[in-house]
Image 1: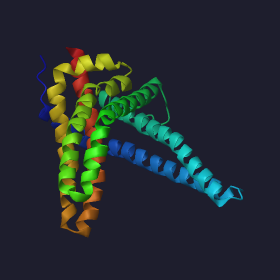
Image 2 (image 1 turned 135 degrees about the vertical axis):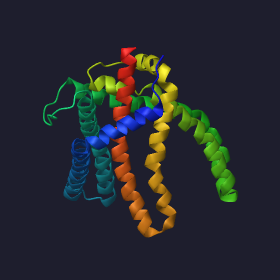
Image 3 (image 1 turned 90 degrees about the horizontal axis):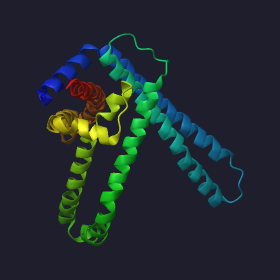
Image 4 (image 1 turned 120 degrees about the vertical axis):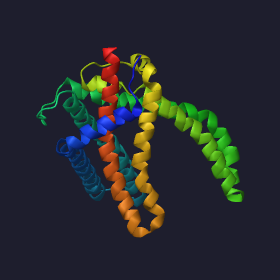
Length: 262
């Protein structure tokens, strides 16, 4: 049976990411700048289209402009996911075989990782819908009417309803977490196979994810200390999220590769 501990994987993954900070920094900065440029481009396109609509009715013009802006979110979302998945797979490949990254060489692995991203998003949305539908009557007829009269009780009930759903999504993410490294290393695996492969490591993966979450969330503790600390907190949160995003990819890849050797 495996001897990997969550702390050992976390420590080694952090050390690897920090030791290759220049390479990871280029990947992280590329994702940030490309997504920023993508967002600004679509905002500009939406603005140009809205200004050029030659409709006499203001309400019809506003409706058409809003609809077009909403439609633009779909290609923007897909391109953003492709950018993130492509560079995420490059980082996993770099961990697997350190060397020079070929930035503009797109292979099958990037496409596999992109499909994994979309599949995972679809599964999560399906799970959220499955949890939300039975909870909707309770939320609509109990929690919402209570909000005005007893807001504290309403918040407590919301937490009691939401926590099991969040925990379920966390477990689902853990059990499907090997699909990403497998896709990036051209060993694509399905939902059932990832569920089976993660079974011996589910406890370690849970604690590994908890370590990442606690450290990423740590900067938010500065929020109550004033406006200056709020800005600092946001900056640190973005940096920590990026850095430990890289750590998570390395850690999951390490768990996955260990499972393949056993």
